[in-house]
Length: 181
Image 1 (spheres, one colour):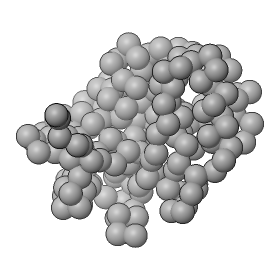
Image 2 (image 1 turned 45 degrees about the vertical axis):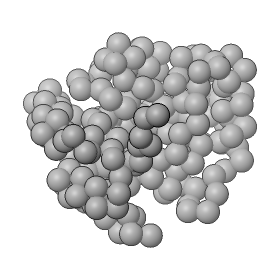
Image 3 (image 1 turned 90 degrees about the vertical axis):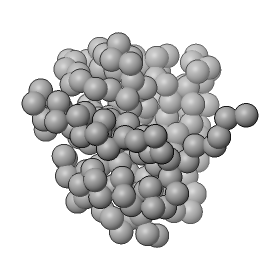
Image 4 (image 1 turned 45 degrees about the horizontal axis):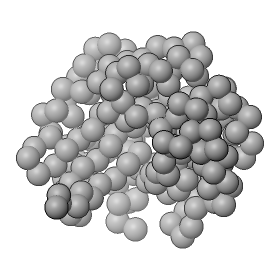
């Protein structure tokens, strides 16, 4: 039986709009008993050099006891839709959502719809069959108590044509204080 892995998804660092360094994030979550962190810094501010430094630092901070997964959050539809690309180690430039999700997959990553707004089923129609999942709970948008019922309804609708789509929960971590609640 393999050991249980505990980790945190949807984390932002000073590489985008977070307030903490990658080193500080790793220390905080490792001290909290986690085994991994999946980063999701905002893609729009990354160029090739910044991405290279980011991935190199994620790799340098990874150890036998803690994994740092590089990733980016891509804004689409005027910022209404956000797609998380977990596990990617290169920038993805895509003019459409289809090309973005395909690019994430080609880069070996997982594509997850983040904090879906009401009515997002109509905005993601072209990718609902290829998304790997939906963030049904987001700490910043949903609070600490319960996810929105609409997020689960959206996942159910997506799963009618895409059985591989899974439910994800993300902290949407920006400030160190979020880790201590």
